[in-house]
Image 1 (cartoon, rainbow, N blue to C red):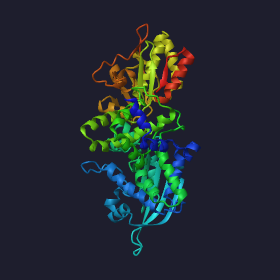
Image 2 (cartoon, rainbow, N blue to C red; image 1 turned 180 degrees about the vertical axis):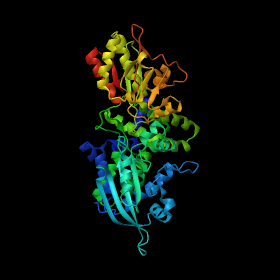
Image 3 (spheres, rainbow, N blue to C red; image 1 turned 120 degrees about the horizontal axis):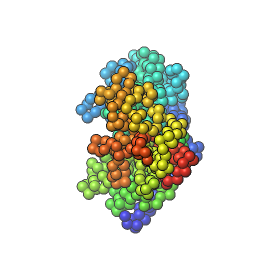
Image 4 (spheres, rainbow, N blue to C red; image 1 turned 45 degrees about the horizontal axis):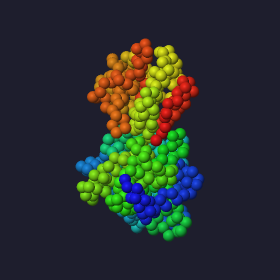
Length: 541
């Protein structure tokens, strides 16, 4: 990267526009609620309410229904025109095209009137469960024949959080039980990327998909990007009420900024959606060939592979947002790129990854007892499990703990870690046989599914006859380490599953549970520091 190109970039008009766009403070920032669900739900209610101060009437509501129609086609119909919607309730909005094509086409093209409209926040729907947004109205296609179709729209809003206790199943049951004549549309609104939702729909049984999609198959998954593209930006462009227009413009900026969710114990900096304005500025910057090397170098400095480019807090947020912007734009940019540009875009694609998204990967740098420095990623918690394992090994081996002392340590760990496993550390002799009720809090997990297929799960008892079988599912002997460009990846098939065992001085072998979350890392460090004088260098990068 040439320094002159960097200086030219930061005085470029498009870069300056982006800088102003991403760094301008909004009322959401001032109140500290930019990544809290309730303020976003309240804003959406305001937008969809026809009598609200925006003076847009039913236009936002109709655009929202049209957006649902589009999302249903784009996310739930595969390339072979197969319908991937698995909802079974006949009143479901997804079945409307087949059950009542006249009403469906009226909704799809906005050719209807709305009567008896109500919209509520935190509406009790089933056994004291509260729907974030609950809307009822009548669809009137032809007022001359007085035909009305009741419609129920339920929105469950999730911002950097997962579903609790299969709540969407209860919501769906409640909504479909309200009025047997109503068309019901249950919407699961999230911050996941469109590509992530599409992939999850195509692979519903994958563990990652089960996190992204709602538990109830009657819900339609929708993200804020669809909401922005289909409803918010179009309404902002036609809104003539000055205050409401400013609110909409400010809200669009809130969605695009890289902001931390401070409600979480371990807040992540992420983006909810990007506007057409951001895309235009980002595209214009990339269109200048001399800027591409600079862009690659700066975005690379956001990740673990290089810390060579200095960024202050404001610049980091700006480039996190811009990196997310590129991650969404790259597939379309590749279509029109020449061979040379395609190579650069492929490099950019690797670097942006999940930058700025709600599923952001957290990275830690840790210096082992032997002086080596390793980088760990939070993706799927595997590498974080490895980090916790390495920290524990350094304490166990470095302090020459005997078997009883390790057992004392695991007693403390069990208090620390709320795990589905009854033990965080196991010894060889404890592994050969155990029961699911003791070690597993539920039996529908992917890991039990795997064991059922392998014929190792019967009648509530899970019995293993070797360390390979046991560790493949639960413990660190399965997480095989391969170093690749300072990142750790795992492949159990072609590697020795024993090399991650921890050996005590007397030859005893022990294994560490691999299920650890990012928020466990600091708690573990504190415990080891207080009880064992652990001071190894550990930092999030």
